[in-house]
Length: 313
Image (cartoon, rainbow, N blue to C red):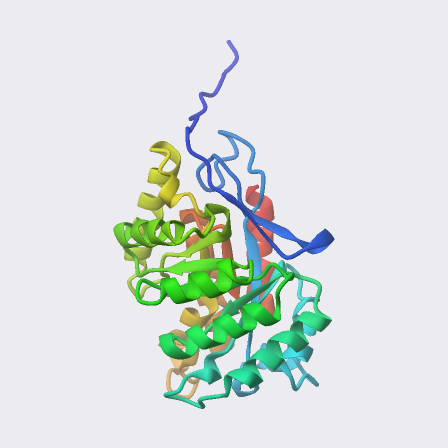
């Protein structure tokens, strides 16, 4: 007797959110199956990989990154180069230097960089802020306005500033908005509801539910991913059916395993290899938990995760 596998049908489906325009647009989400469960149903849109470009990238000293971006001096030049990276689906611009507690780079300069990048790249653009809500509110609003028609994703709207970010990014400029919370299904659902009550369409919302480098409290991330995907798929909870974007690179390249020198930790081996492995492990954990996209940095890590995705879908 032949074996007929039983499939697990789900009533819920993740929203399909389009970023970018034309032939280079990408779609996040759209599946009605658990992560990589292709034996239950086809995965319509494979998870996507973004490449982080920082306005502080001139401080990156990892040999592989220095070599890859050799000769690049501006965000636009680095973004154009990042498009050639094997496995890159979109470009994520990180304006960490805008932080008032750091370099306090002027908003106008950041906007000019975003515009310059948009003029030279063809892949979709995601915007990361400086983690200072007041500065981010101004930064997101100005960039969203300057890049109207590019269909970008602006991260992040938080509980404290979702009205400002949601109104200026999604309603006024027609861009996609990321809802950022910290490893809590209830907070994630509440923020999505509040954005929808603001009249932001559900199809214009992605989620950043919080991430962490593996070994640094990732069990909280894993449990939150599981609970959100279960509610979205099995309970057909429309308030949790937004695609999830995980900004992996900023966490993984800031932990000790990625920053400690080989002189300080000789038994740990190559610092660069440690960072690559940390980035790959964290991205893979997010994707198998339910993330629809990850943001990464190192060319070797990006290529490895793209191959990982291709072999599973």
